Length: 459
Image (cartoon, rainbow, N blue to C red; front, side, top):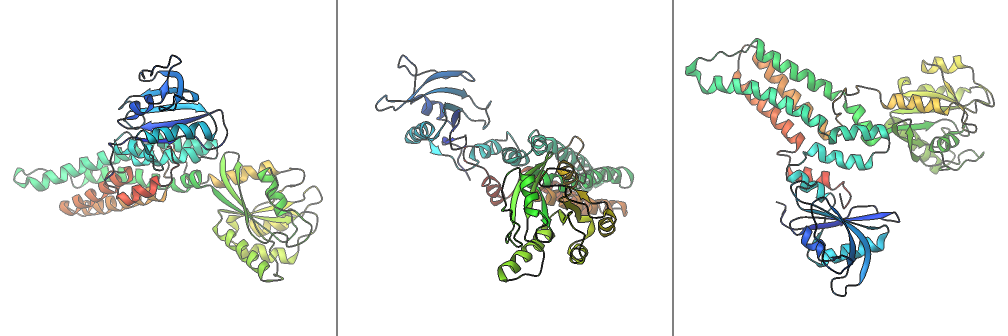
């Protein structure tokens, strides 16, 4: 069991230079510890009123040496992020001032916070559930505005409210079943047939719809993987650099320059995308190149989309036709003809191979690149987009809902089959436990530890 009786402190802003840095304290001694090193211009210790910013100085208590001018903000629990007393000290950016203030707070009895411990305390004190706590970390790591919206929706409790609605509906059915079982002498009517089965059907349909959001939600959190493949010297690395808007891969007319995979993060018009440049597909000349070709094929297998790049300045060769057909299912491949400013491969040839017209681009001039990003975005966001509700963004979410749906389905079959209220009640209890674990109530401590280990210190 974790202790909530001590006071924790950490720098809440990233390391490096910036306008301000924030040192955060939380716990019963937060105000006392902060006031121990804060002084007004008159030398007096300031009073810290809730939600009032106080301009003062941070000083070394032993020598009164001024460390920095700061703003101190006190938030009294439970009206704070952690539902404990919280103090935030804003000082000038950089490592020196914030580090010195943190050292003084630790010397006064505060403890250095573990990664994610402020959010962990908010969770343990019931301010947020586990889905919302995970969303805090995902908001911090969101790479695009669209991804941010997904995680903000979870943070605001959209998914949590849906799960609570399922719990309530299942609880209503369960109460009726348990009343029937506990008071047989009352001769209560088991609505077995119609009403209970209909209620379970409604919950099951909602759960099944939510499971369909997982691919979409996972893209928002982890990014969509796109592999660039093709023969040597078709311009794969040039295309990667154009998409990344910086020189990330070496470009050379020498075939076989790229030996290993190179991965960059790209904002594809709102979709977070990981683009992987690969070695050219050809008969390897040595063991290093052979490993590069192997990694290229593996990247294609793991990717959600393969950009099969062709050289638009020359006719389509037999080797390229073979590679296109043998590589990967066509619905996962987008044919991209690079060097479109120099010439064009006949569209009919590539349309026959992949079932859709190719996309013509020029990595040199940027022609067609925006359309390429649009197509990548459309593939990345393919699937069921949640309408007003939160998406399932983690495997843990999907497995909890899937297990709950399985239990609801078994309960429905038992009741529709003409009875077995005791077995149906047991399945509904299992479903409710799965949903409770999704929100963090009854979740094993090792799972909670793993989730919060992903956080940065200070959050």
